Every structure is written in C-alpha cells, then in structure tokens.
Length: 117
Image (cartoon, rainbow, N blue to C red):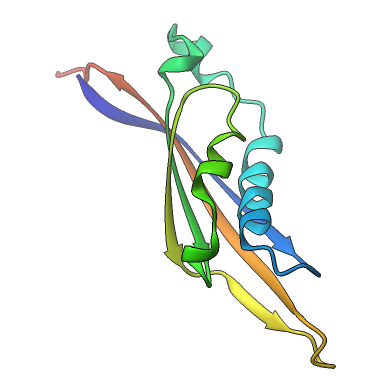
C-alpha cells in the first residue's frame, strides 16, 4: 500500500486583536475545510477514519501555537500538524497591536494500492 494524495485545500486565518497564534492557525484550518464539501472517502469506499490528513501551517511564531488544540478541529481522520515559519505579523499603524495571519495547507490522502499498467 502507498500513501496517495487525493485532495489539497488551502486556507487563511487571522487574529486581528488578540495576537493569538493558535486561533489564527485554527481559523486557517477551518477556512480550508469549511469551504469544501468533499466526499473522497465515500467515493473510494473508505471509512472517514482512514483519511490521512497532513496539515502544514505557516505562521510567524510556530512555537506559540498549541498544535494539540488544532487536532480537535478535525471531526474524523488521522490529522498530523506541522508548523513552519510563514504567514505574516502586521503591526497596526498606531502601534496598538499586531494582526497575526496564518496560512494552512490541508492534504488528504489514503493508504491505497497503486495500479500498475
């Protein structure tokens, strides 16, 4: 069996006032997931629990993100979170705070036999 990528989804999330890196990352994941209605598991006859979900989050302060909290977003499947430096921190012009922007790539795969012709 081989891990076979079926879907790649992208999302963006922000924390406008609270500079909450975990919340910005969570919103990026939700943005990627909630704009789609994918029936990939059903289409291939797999249970939803068999979905291998690789999530990469680009954010300026990866160590400030609680990746365990992000795992709870997924209603099924086997999610794995990878945090990398990316996204943006945008300072407000009056110096009153920073807006945090996170980007997410959510990749759904299945362990399936490849066809050889």
